[in-house]
Length: 358
Image (cartoon, rainbow, N blue to C red; front, side, top):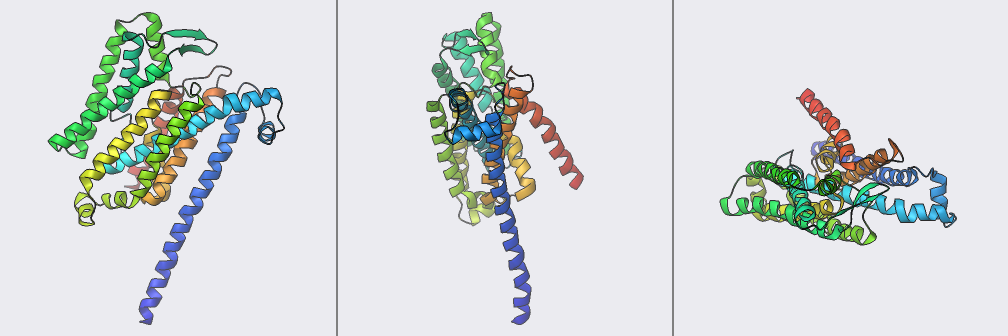
């Protein structure tokens, strides 16, 4: 008995250290997100400092700093955090249930469906006539545009899920269906713009840029409720996602209803991504990059990968928005372009590192 005890103790110590490292990393990542949020609130053309922001939080700010921090910066930062968490978590779960590392809202046609819905509302229904402001073009009827964008993104989701449900296509084929729908919706958006007036085309282009500054607290609360609900659901199924990593047969042998898990997960992911995209426009690469980045640190254990991806998504979107506001201030660059510029090289680097390890 003693030799066996001597063999198991080091393994127990190694496992406890493994868990302790991941919990410590999550705690440090949470602190980093908080620090990045404070820095993002202080960043901009108004010249606020971090100390001024902290004093404003403590009730010692001036009328000007109170207006900037509470009316402009905090809603924008809150939108970035909630949207980053939602996009990263949905991308992480999609990659698991579809067994495809390229699965995300942008590769399954959800974002392109939302863009088509927004273009349809602006051009055909006249729901988003543009107006000139200091920031450029703004949508005067954002709720109708958001509703049509949500309908377009869910239409793409229903087509993919319908093929999966009634034709029993494979997870790989679901991703290919999303690619085909992306091309279809992109073509439809292009045709709508081709026959539209210049001002309506400008409004469509402005919406597709992505914007974190147009959300009110009502929209932020709606996004928060949807993202929080989906995050709770995903965390409750973390062990099922772990089982799914070893294949459908192994997961079924462990008692997992793979078909129901896949369909329910896709519906939840699509609903969450649709709500986010309908309010803030097209944001690329967050749902693709954050999970891959965190896998290199915490591995494929979804007990830690889900919260790590959520925090990484929030930080990536916060950093992207800060860069967009600081690069050529006081002009705010399109957030969608910034996430693409930051995300594409990082994704290529991860692919290169993965190939080097092999």
